[in-house]
Length: 478
Ligand code: SF4
Image (tube, rainbow, N blue to C red; front, top):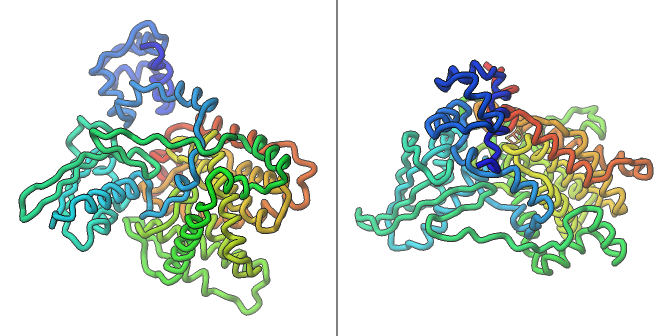
């Protein structure tokens, strides 16, 4: 039992809630000495106490019985770096686990059962509790169209294989003809009960930026060429599709108006920003306004549950397309140029994903929007044909100045601070490239070091600031 790190998990959670051992013991109906013993590994809590802790801390029981930290430490030495197809995913926002995963499961099930004329989906756990805010129901309805689907939110059932569980039923003439239980395990990935999770293949032999850069220098190649060497040439076809979808999200977002869904009543602003041209607008103001309008466009589409591309996540999906769309229009870069930039950006995102995290729930917003900003900076630097060192420096600056950035979305909606944050990060990506252009020779911090720092910082962040909506703006906004 010792390797599960019960003691550390309990004391970390208790300290995050600013509770003394005595207060904590009272909540659980045990003495402060009992808590002290758990935290010093002298004894272990009963199952009943563990259940109470799950409720109190709002964590799943898996948290106590998994050795996540140890696995992560091992993984940092032997992680796999899969295809960039796992990074850029086309699907419905605003959340890869709450919309993309369920959507994928429903589409797959519908395709497998063409005989069915109607469906029913029962959502459990977090999908039931926050599914409405995340528009899980909308994603499911869209997936089953034109067929009918009934959706149930079951917030009562607790005995679940995963916090994001859903049951899907198919009916033919009112009689059930098929059933699956699915877990949406994160990043849009799903696990079907009774079937094995397909592990991602390690496509990239090198995982650190420094190693890749050495390899590229030796072979006299650019980062996008390394991507194509690892992925195969047909990756271009995939990237072309990704760019089309990114552009569609911007165009759809610019054509949209009204309010975003959810009780915040946030007005959509992309179109407004796009059209607000002042007579004496400077070149710089125009650039900022347009870049922001594109970032808003994608992020608002994401918040509405419309189709977007994760880059690297749903919440941070506006940064990269905004920068690339703006620069393509301004400088007439060809689509082929943009594809190379997208491949470079994907490599940066993949390095962060492999060596640290791109999850707001794991490391805060620095991991999502910070990474998106680094991807956009690297993409832009590639378009400007900058050196490997300059690309690295641009990406490094972009993450460095997002370090410590918390994730605190109000009401759990991916709207405030998320949408505006995408716009700010897009402008910051352009600035990072400009700075890198001049100062690369004087830099002291490598990209690998800042990625490691981001991960360490993320692990030190209180859970209130890691997509729980329990701290920051989410707590103080009334
Ligand atoms: S604040 Fe949280 S939900 Fe919003 S973009 Fe950042 S990481 Fe994603």
